[in-house]
Image (tube, rainbow, N blue to C red; front, side):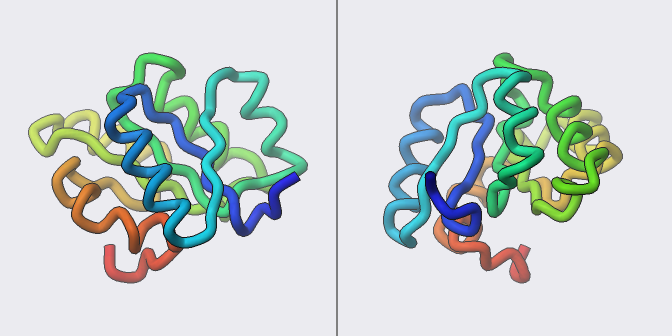
Length: 125
């Protein structure tokens, strides 16, 4: 099993973005775990990832509910969550922030800062 500090959980439907995140993770020695189901979320309670990256436009699982899942559990509430979305979706951005998403970025900024994000350098966000 991968050490939690080396694992980044992602909820990303877009294969292009998933591949970019995976490449950045490999470059800094981290592994990606794709979130595919509600049951999988439950498994994080005893084995939290280092961070969570969420495409706020995901259709796989409700992104806002996923954020709420992490933030409502004591064992997971400190796990940083980074969401990315089109900058024009202001209601979704506000909803993600209200749900507890630690950082919400436009897709373009997310892409530009991806290596810093995946390496855990979130201070610049």
